Amino acid sequence: MWVNVPVQELTYIHINSFRFQKNPAVSADSLTDINTVWAYYNGNLIGEFDLPATFPVLATGTGQVMLTPGIPNTGLNNEEANYPFYTNDTFTINAAPGKVITHSAVTSYYSTTKVIPIADFTAVPGFSLAGGAGGLTIINADSLKYHHGPTAGIFLNSPGDSTVIVTNNPFTINTSYSFIEFDYNCTMPFSVSLQPVFGSSPAGSITFLAGVSPNRGWHKFYIYVSEFAMATKGDSYNLWIQANLSPEQQYGMVLLANINLLSIDN
Image 1 (spheres, rainbow, N blue to C red):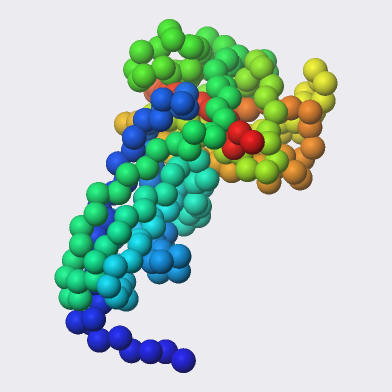
Image 2: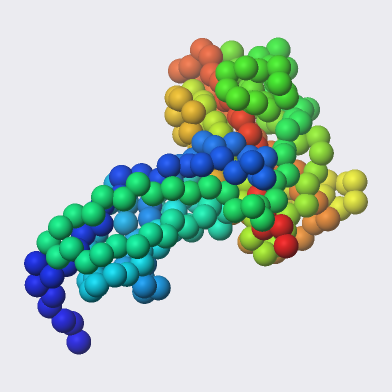
């Protein structure tokens, strides 16, 4: 049964965004893309809201509000996910019917977050479809200074060219809860795929996971990979990045920074 609550009895909470605090115990960067929030009052879910948000609370006396950060899984705003590595923000409010309480939300990585860097790539022979190897430049590790610690840059200069880079060092994926996250800045589209490895032998199958559209400026990308690892068994996995230059483009770049596999360190 629905209960109509007079507007004047509701207290409103306004959240503009989440401020990210660096956790010195976690070796991951601080760029985030937190665009939703799950709100709770005294342990009960109020709802999920796009940021910035103003939402009502049927508060009485003193109560506790908890805010859980939400991120776009696979870069899609319509596929929001709780990010298990970001801390909740919890604070106490006093009921103020008809009033708006503005709160500055704060989050950081949990100290139990395990970070595995994915930092070394090479070009895949035979995957340059137009311009050839001469149209591809890969810069690894600290050679590229566009951002704080980029690990790879792809540059294509032949219209219609397409190329693939792959990790040199396969990594294991925790099937309980693991994400790959990275910062990116690109003027041409690229895709993200995974390939299982058995012993030291990569499997022939490569599974496409997500595509990224051109997006200038630095942005954050998250993708949940535990489900893939559960369905596609391997001793370890390779990350594949394919970049594509449109026939109308003379030049394109994909800059990738702080590529990490994150899981909960039990």
